[in-house]
Amino acid sequence: MPDPLPGPYCDNTATRQSIIDACLAMQASGVNQGVSGNISLRTTDGMLITPSGVDYEKMRPDMLVLLPLDGSRLRRGQMKPSSEWQFHRDILLAKPTEMAVVHAHPVFCTALAMNHQPIPACHYMVAAFGGDDVPVAGYALFGSQELSDLVLLALRSRSACLMANHGAVVTGDSLERALWRMIELETLAKGYVTSLSIGSPKLLNSEQMAEVKQAFAGYGLKP
Image (cartoon, rainbow, N blue to C red; front, side):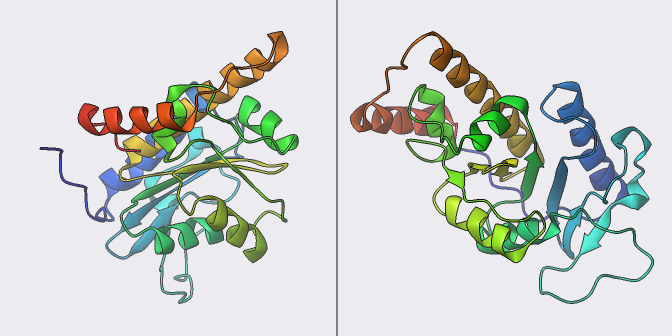
């Protein structure tokens, strides 16, 4: 029997530190550079999200920003949340079983996003994101409601998408799952870009991808 999905995380020092640790892991893996990435986590009181423009090495648990999911105002005395807080909040509202959202600008994902190129069924691990491709959300100004709407559309039946001329975003039923997905997504993007440089990738067909999804269910890897 698969492990039960975690409910909302408690807003405590350990949870806040886990977000910082995930940011540092994302940096160490090369998936993100500088302070362009951001992470949010569903809590019993709303969502915790990384603050705007703070170096991960200098981030402290008390700097994480608690935002309500009901649209009410930011609590006084907190730091400014990431400029991308809107699509984080909207994703968590639209996907109640998802607990974490990770956004970053991985080099190969971003290269494809610059070209508005989705990742097709070039490798069976594409199925780990819920479909036969990883789509590209249309372009809109960062931090805007328009961008949030476009990201939600791309994520409607997926747990990851590229963002045109921007980067990538993934979701997960835990922080660990979301971080794994971001690293796996960049690995796929790197493989796809490399395959394009030496020829034309041979894609898996819909029947083959369906077999992968079925096999994932038995393997315990939920798309």
